[in-house]
Image (tube, rainbow, N blue to C red; front, side, top):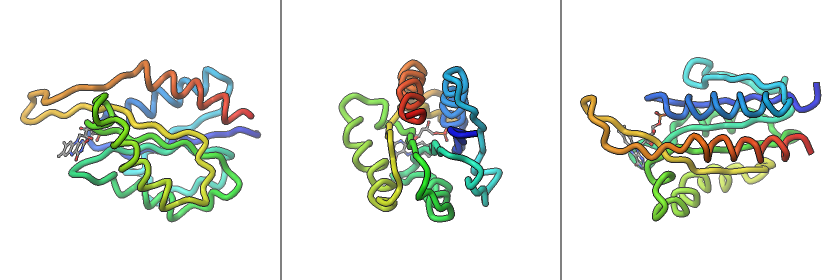
Length: 156
Ligand SMILES: Cc1cc2nc3c(=O)[nH]c(=O)nc-3n(C[C@H](O)[C@H](O)[C@H](O)COP(=O)(O)O)c2cc1C
C-alpha cells in the first residue's frame, strides 16, 4: 500500500514512546497505514517495507539516544519521506526550543543530508529524579498538531 508508514522510536523513561504512540494514532486517524516500532527492542529494524519513516528519540546529557543515529546509518531511505522528532527538556522550553531544534535535530539532518526530511520537530519532555518531577514540559496537543500536518505531507 502506498503511504505505508512506520513510527520508529527510542525511549528510556517513556515520554518519546508516548509521543510516538500519539503520532501513530494521528496518522492512522488520517487514513495512513501506520506501525509502531521500538528501536530499543528491535535494534536491527530495517524499514524497507515502508514508504515513509517517522523517527523519534530523546536527549540525555546533550546526546540523542544512539538508536536514532543507528537507524539512519542502517537504512537506505533514498526513496522515502522522513519525519524526525526529538524530545528534550530544551525542546519544551520556549527560550531553548530553537537552539534545541538546531543542535539536536540538526545533528541528524546535517549528518544524513541525503534523507528527504519533510518535517522536523523538537518536543518537550519530563524528568523525574527519585520519583520527584524535576520538570514536565510535555505538550501532547503540539505533538498531535505536528502529526496532523505531517500526515498531509506524507500523503502528497
Ligand atoms: C539523566 C538525564 C539527562 C538528561 N539530559 C538532558 C539534556 O542534556 N538536555 C535536555 O534538554 N534534556 C535532558 N534530559 C531530559 C530528557 O530529554 C527527558 O527526560 C525526556 O523526556 C526523556 O525521554 P524518554 O522518556 O523518552 O526517555 C535528561 C534527562 C535525564 C533523565
